Amino acid sequence: MLKALANLFSIFSTDLAIDLGTANTLVYQLGKGITINEPSVVAILNDGSGNRRILAVGHEAKAMIGKTPDHIMAIRPIKDGVIADFSTTEAMLKYFIAKAHNRKTLVRPRIIICIPSGVTEVERRAVEESALSAGAREVYLVEEPIAAAIGADMPITDPSGNMVVDIGGGTTEVAVISLGGIVISKSVRIAGDKMDEAILNYLKKKYSLLVGEIMSEQIKIRVGDAYPVEQPSSMEVKGRDLVRGVPRTITVTSTEIREALQEPIRAIVDAVKSTLEKTPPELAADIYDRGIVLTGGGALLRGLDKLINKETGLPVQKAEDPLACVVLGSGKILDQFDHLKRLLVTR
Picture 1 (cartoon, rainbow, N blue to C red):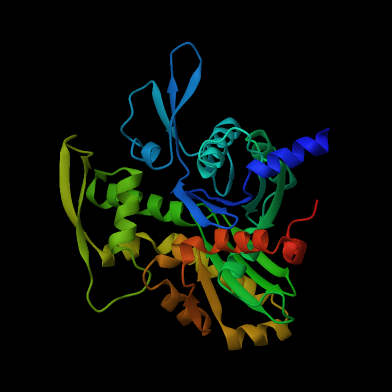
Picture 2 (tube, rainbow, N blue to C red):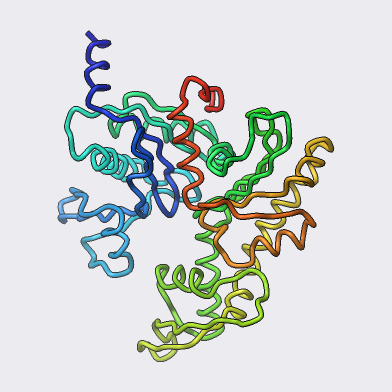
């Protein structure tokens, strides 16, 4: 009976690979590719009697951050790459699973979910249980550096050293991979979110200007850089004057934002150098020849590849599609499940 039910669910379900990120969630559908790329944000309505109702998820919910009345909360349930709010994560996953299947009811897909390499057993179990509660038939986990390297078309199953640096929203994963496994890795909970926070604090300290997290993210994207450029760029920034308490506009330059980003960027560079120092000499020789590949949204920060090249002396390149590497790699495992399932996290 149970087997018959499972077969029935599999008929109505398309298997999924999910990059459950701190900043964004991407969903890869078997046979279709990436079908969802939305912010990992959930807006919740509190009716006053203790009951909570999901009001919006993804893009619609992100637009509400910093603009909600008291009875509505815009929550980011993933913090530093791991689940911080179990029930909200479950609701978010349920929404994305249903959206991927066009709201069909008989849906119980097999799901591969990416996790940071440094998570604890408790954090792993939270991801599994959240996905199962959201409607998954089976849940498999893959470490983000493995998925990112596959998505960047690195030959990780060969007996040679491959170094990937995946900079997401909550974590930076640095790993040396050979023969389909992680030989040495370092996971630091400093990435895109900490960059946004650094910009916010810089503006508060230097200009007494308070900006929201969406504005600080826009500043990072538009004028942020990690390495000096010939022609600095600038942009207008709107916020609240902390002294006078009124709205105010200032102009910031890429040079200033580079100064603001020094601390989180230094932590990322140090993680790369620390990993290289612990890499076995045979694999280090391979990395010297092949270089380092950057993936994740943080790889898009202008000049970061040049800075890491200067600090390590190694060739550094960005993946073709840094933002999608993790979910594309998970999708490849889904596409070639029998051949690549050995790369999944074993229980």
